[in-house]
Length: 218
Image (tube, rainbow, N blue to C red; front, side, top):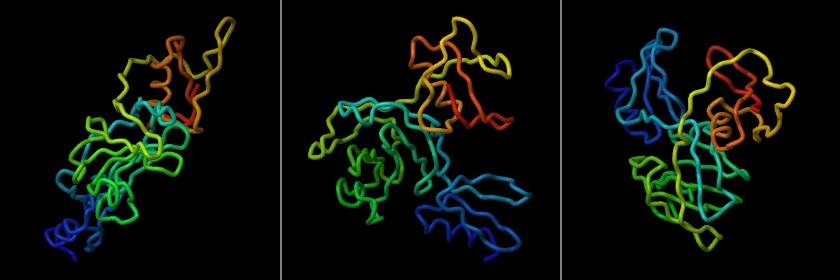
């Protein structure tokens, strides 16, 4: 396949195709990952409706305490963001047409956002075709495995952080503690942790470059 219309038709047939490019006269479908334009001079085509402005971090608060806290985007599933949170919990998108996507195919029988923890799907939100973002209302709980409503998901309010210097913000009278759990984190996660702590005034990030930060945070 070497022409864009035919390549686009192939992409449209796949629910998890986010776009395509024509490289060396060949059609290449972009599946379950970010689609970026103008990479190495290759022209990329984005499927209409595929691009969503999802946050890097989502806050969860529910009557089931094991999933309460910050969820950080770590990758994608079916072309939608996948997040990890407290106690190994995950927030991801499932397709009804995929039999192994239990919450979608067997529980609610709809495309869903779902929170999985401890080997169980605890919560799910019906979202046909990804039409509803995970921060909307309408979540359902599996009370048979201990999950309880209410549950709320929201994007933490951003606060301005001013760059100080390339060193550690430590010294006499400055407490240095509360390492952000989870190994390497983004700056957004570290800032959200600080925003949630009334005693936090400064953050320290490692692994920073012109493209952002991904490393241990304090």
